[in-house]
View: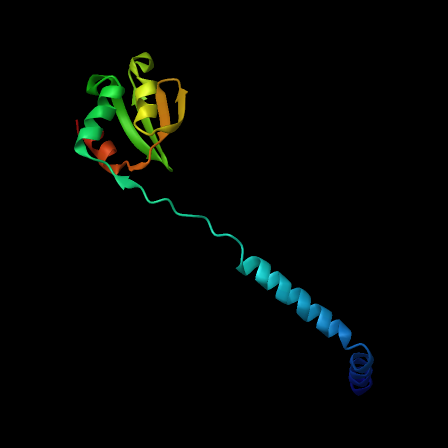
Length: 124
């Protein structure tokens, strides 16, 4: 019975070989679609200078107005004492985008490597 089945399969492939060609083309197309998909572009952040760090701290209203700073993904998250003391327009001039204020927190995306800024804020 096993031999009969194999001969039926081989006989079917003998007359319907074009199905193999269609399956091969579809698999090739699927491979090319996944392979050629656009990969996300990595954004390289510029190092932040000490003068800019001091300017950012001034924009927050000084060190007395800052409780804590964290990096939240690509955003800088700063917990403040008084949100009204923040100069949002100056942040925009320094390159900040996506500024979001929620309660005592302010989050923003900066074009700089924020580790040095966060470290300096949390040290003091």
